Length: 227
Image (cartoon, rainbow, N blue to C red; front, side):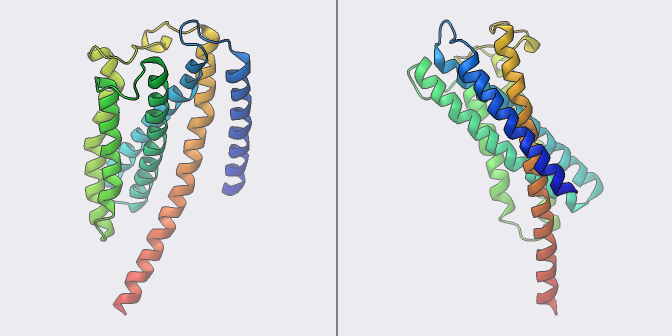
């Protein structure tokens, strides 16, 4: 039953992405100042939000592990962290392509870009650190602490364009006090956020089952070595 739900959701996500691509590429006009390149925003922005949501889920999983001491929550946290990095990488890459066209450079060391990169590297370090500890309980405990202390970097990156003067544009979405997008263009960004967020949840669910299965196999191996 769970697999059928996953397949149905994946089909819906695929259909939405195809429909959104048609709207983004063919239905919307070029932006007055940026031309066609602005269309990268419809993946840059939703990926950033999805990455932040996955980071929040990782935080929740880490806090719940420290509270419940249940390794299921550790598996949930690491699964969410992997998707945080995946969508964070999309944010960084699309941002660099966009910057190369608009600014004439691939990268600028301003507050938004730097804080996003540092946050991404911190979550990458979380995954690397996990491989250094074999004992599951100790690995889960230390990983949870790292995840909790890493999450504020997501908030800093999100608020950086309001706290500091950056080369990165200020808020353009209306819910953040911006107003730099036409209503039809802003709606398309939200419509593309929906399938990306659902895709992230699907992948987290798949990785969670894999992590729990791996944990059971590791437990059987340890028992076999002790016999």
